[in-house]
Image (cartoon, rainbow, N blue to C red; front, side, top):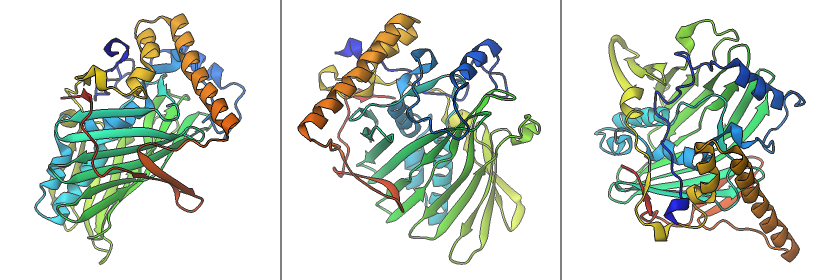
Length: 382
């Protein structure tokens, strides 16, 4: 089994080798290939069912990408939150952790859309992370991460909605993240910025939009804005920039101003004393020296594991064997269609194994883990 499990390096801060210092892609010929895919797509079109050939895929599933945002860090941000002495200390650390989940990407390639029931299960130290694809149309991914020693758990329910916006593709990242510090009786709720895949006038990738982080018990709130770069790329100071504030929602007092760039450093300024400035996030420290996960127990890898489901395709992409890649991708997708037809013929409804899932027009998708603690995984990372 182990030879079919293909795991790849997570995105580091300098991962985007095909781009210039501004994160802009340098190959106009490849850009023409990308644009040709969208020549008949109308503005505002939902691209969630849009199929890309494997030449536009990176060798990993979106479930793996979501998981890496939690378990792949150069420093232990999650336990540093738990070790904060005051609610405000912990809240500032949560803001830094939220920023750390904003990861660089490579222009021109995207992860695979996970198939229904696909899972990704990885351990890093005391942190065990489990993801499951709980819906295929629409795409909905659930995550549960727990640290039993630190008495911490994290949940997320993401439903990405990609839309063609004329100059590129913007992915609305619907869903909430929750981080629970049970030793402190604190729950932090936050959303995720949108992902922008820009074709024109200057090709590039970015995170844009507004993020709100709140502690439900203390009333502390952070409002962050991921600044959208101007159409022609003017104002390099706004490239990958974050601005915002931390305030007490009970008193309405602004405590700190937040400013910086998610791919370098983010600073905190005391709202009452601008001379007091400190760095709360350093991307080079957090997103450098990341390790590729490895299989420590091949016999225990689930058949639904992302790295196994897509292993043949990932290996073909890594080897630049595009004929084999197309064949492998078609096999995975056709197998999924066969399973769907079988369920429909029997009148069966698929039910997630690890999450309870609900959906409403008002609240969107909610994914609640069935187990209190995520078990140790057969795949690990340092």
